[in-house]
Image (cartoon, rainbow, N blue to C red; front, side):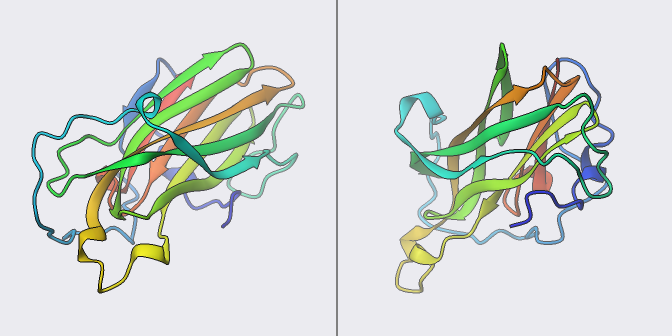
Length: 204
């Protein structure tokens, strides 16, 4: 995993800094996205949304700190700003969502020097999960990018019931050190996420 990779910045450069929003980038489709997600049966309709608060959660990645310097295309952080203790937790409960009826989404909540990103996204198999892709402070802009990850434990031919897509809920939390950046952008990316990536930006 390359937490400090550079490939995804151009996807969100057009994201305005302002009130928290959820957007999907249009200029950089993920090459791993499947244009024809596998059909599955049975199809379940009318599934209620599953929230992080309502189900037990397990840590799937972290804690991770942003580095003191960044590789291109990110600028180095300024004024000693860092993001520390970034951790992903995924709810145990998953819902089969074969028709992709539940929206992929993110919300950002900031209190003092701490932040929490709550999200919902889709994975291909029931055992798949969410991990961190990038944690950086880019000048005065914090960027926390997560991605869906394949887990081989249930991806077997003798487990057709494990194939989805599945809707999963997750949260990402951490804290700012050295003061607050000007903005926080979070994303969830993956082949079964709407447009391969959903972004949210909160002005600080």
